[in-house]
Length: 321
Image (cartoon, rainbow, N blue to C red; front, side):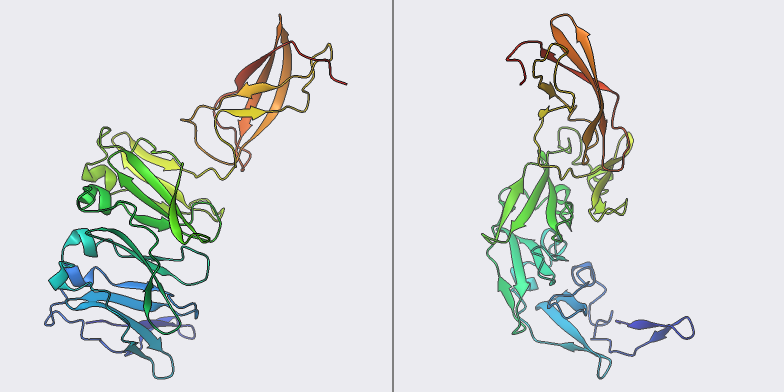
């Protein structure tokens, strides 16, 4: 039985809205995971109210809360073929239902994986689901994505503070990261790195892959990624700096003592924690025919990342003007 409660600000107590049970009873079969575990709440039409989505034997049902009468109402939106007859009572399908705003329009989209890959739907103003045809990303049963070590890791979360949820999922070769391109209306891959979450490193074992989750842990407006490995918890931050490694940095004191321009390569260790970083405390030290620069890598919060590193540049070239 579905129960809706509201929090009474005057007396500090939860109050039953008596908004309707929607027939989600044990007697009606709703105590089965292929139904009860699909319940989702999200604002799918941008009206500032969360709608209720849930899958039953005959497909997906969409309910809106009518504030005038304090009742849930089925708006008879398309059920998207998610019925038991089409095998949507199988966990490799029903467990993948996700809702999040992937394009920054203020409405949550519906994303799920079927036998032939990923599906992406948006809810239009006529109370109908519309297939964006955003790409199946190869997440097919034939490609092995019907295995829980892969499909169950699907996450939707904003990792780069752009107001849009990115898609994260673990494959046999590690983590895959996708962003929804609003111009092409397609999912596009981001070269964010596999993070070593590969089957070779035993991340196909449930004690590890089942712990992968994302949330904003430092209040900077972008989600971090956390997971538990055999050696303990690991936390990652997505680097939004528009640079590739290795990075060519120019120091402010980029002239040698005899007037030659100096540039140098600074190669951060890819294993270091990611973050928005800058080079600080650059110190020039003569060393024969080269000049050594000692650099301190600092992230966006001002904390040192790793130990001071060095880079050298040959003392040759055209004198600076």
